[in-house]
Image (tube, rainbow, N blue to C red; front, side, top):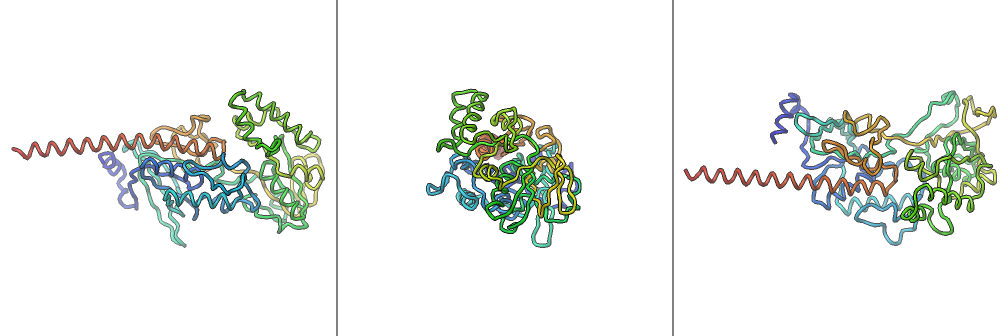
Length: 426
């Protein structure tokens, strides 16, 4: 309370704004990372507030993913802490099934985010020892400023908060439809069209495959090297096999074994324009965060010529694209499968915990905890399993601090009560 008075003294306009004191952490983001952290805190008996800029949980999954999407990894590697997937779910749950799981997860742990509340800034006030989180609450056409004051802050906005839109010469003059993969739902509207898919990650591959399945003609831009692995090897999940081998073998050896197995299953993919990086797939994921493509059918379409692999783009013109090799293609539409980025630098002020790219500076497994009650959930570049690991660590750490502070407060209250009794005897 004394620190709160310091905050008021330091900011004379404090009481002129709507604000609330949170007796626990503020969690920014109601995606899987935020929900997992909230559930673990609930189990520890720690109160919290979850802020979400959208009008639903897991807005990336609900609003910015294509219809055919399924989890790329087996469900046991994607479930959140304390509540597994239903037994009747398939090994690779669909987008709708995963959303249903997240909604039931929030209901099970009684997690009620404050929706339509976009964080504008968050900074640590050294004078008071509190975090000050300023938001804008949207209700219809009305917008209201609000502020949360808390001891700890959990950043759970994730690695995919904002889509990356490349600046390509002539794109504004192209004339046809240009969308980011976050706005792509189905290839049905592109039937009969020549579509340029910019990007060859998992999204680029799946969008190209979906376009083929809807009788469109996709050309996929492969600007750099890429690892393509089969989703399963001899009936076993590739990821599960890698995890199993890493318990006994060094990472470099697991990488070599995975590439040999991939060659046996997929053959030589370089002749189709898919050059492999010199760094192994697991090492590349760990050091650069670049996820290998898990093939679910696109490679077969590339072999058959239904998906045309092309090199980098030089420039766009009206209804046409010129490639770096001088080739020109007539196209009707463009899908930018150019990825996502963190938005943390746009609202988190000060501190040395996050780098300019919006990721914690410390590498896994040390990137979950900063100073002054700052935490990060879901920035491990290790998918949902990494987010779950962060959530459990964060909740345990916050719970210990919360219990220690509560114990000290009780002791001070008892001591004051005893002094009052002593004084009353005179």
